[in-house]
Length: 89
Image (cartoon, rainbow, N blue to C red; front, side):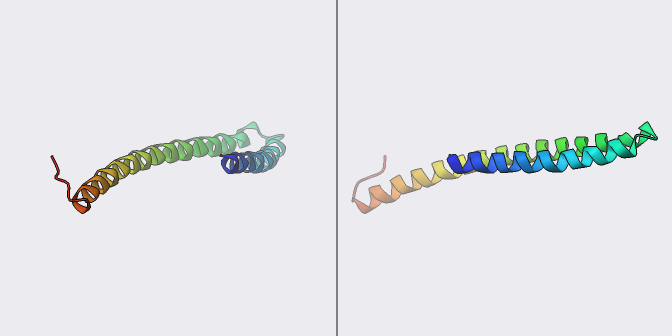
């Protein structure tokens, strides 16, 4: 659990540094023409879409993992019953 927290903070800090550099670049570029701020909104929108897709993919993988673990648990029970000479009901 603590390792996950470290990875989250590492990603958060890296994102904060990189995003502030990108925002500063576009702010300086938009000092003459406000329409130059449009790419910043496109970048933010793309990042949001990537985050949503990652969340959906991870939810599907998590559900498949739970189904697999239930299948393996029932298979383990069957093998244990056969090995111990017991009958399955």
